[in-house]
Image (cartoon, rainbow, N blue to C red; front, side):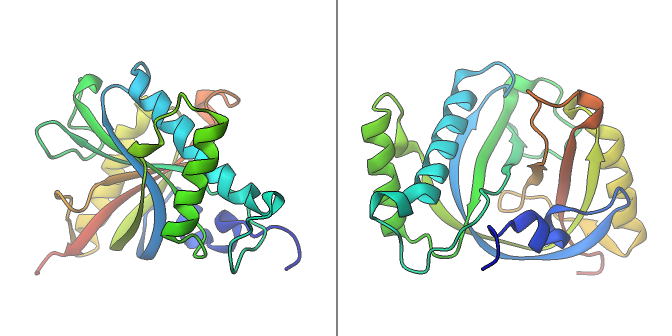
Length: 216
């Protein structure tokens, strides 16, 4: 393979939509996930979750250097951080919850198809030895198949997403679909920018909503 496989570039329909909404059929993918609750800007739980997610993802990526290279391993770029979001009272579409302390979330990072449960457990062992203060037991390897969705690229700060969500919801209705957010299908965000290094107006976030035919 020439160069490291970059999921964002190779699967642009999933990660690089335009700023005008579109429909996409999202296939089954493997993720390392951690669930939590609270304002992601202030709660320690969210910060710890990200440290574990990135720690495990890079432990898997670097496993080839430890003599524990998984079967089927190939060079790749660690995919971006993603998040599923809902409120303590259930429904959340990106604008309906104002108090961020009431947010519930599943933070997650996609994994290549060669990452089995055995590979995942090995990464937990490696990270646990390297950083014993991290609670890797919170993480799980899970398959997620979102199916039919509508998505759009939001450019700007996270607190300014409501206008983009409004455009997405209008597109869904005009295209003969309905919003299908439910307990099993959540408001989904994919973070392509690093807020520590990027000014808010230049951040890029994929906003994805599950949909179904309006007559179904």
